[in-house]
Image 1: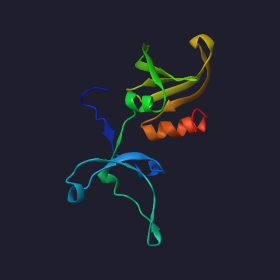
Image 2 (image 1 turned 135 degrees about the horizontal axis):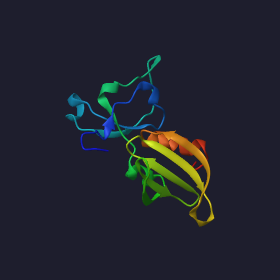
Image 3 (image 1 turned 60 degrees about the horizontal axis):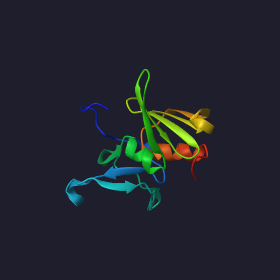
Length: 139
């Protein structure tokens, strides 16, 4: 990511789900300080509360997020684009920061690649957690 690129983006409502991680600010309540939050929908009267999206921001997926989910950085990988490889006991993960493209595969003996379980774009830690659960990498 170049210096001009932001570490954060404004989510769209469709991204929100129980457990979605984001930061929120409200100038009248907390002087514009960004506070880490986790989305938990609640009913306000007869309707579900919908947050003001303009007061939210989400951190783009990065090395810290991947490592917090049990992967260890292994090496930089360069082909058409710079990437990084992370591993855990049974799986490998290739992350291309510029495009937010992720590939998750089974690690075989001798560190060779097995079956690829996922290849696609993941913008944030919450999305990665969901994918890891869907393919059975974590519970």
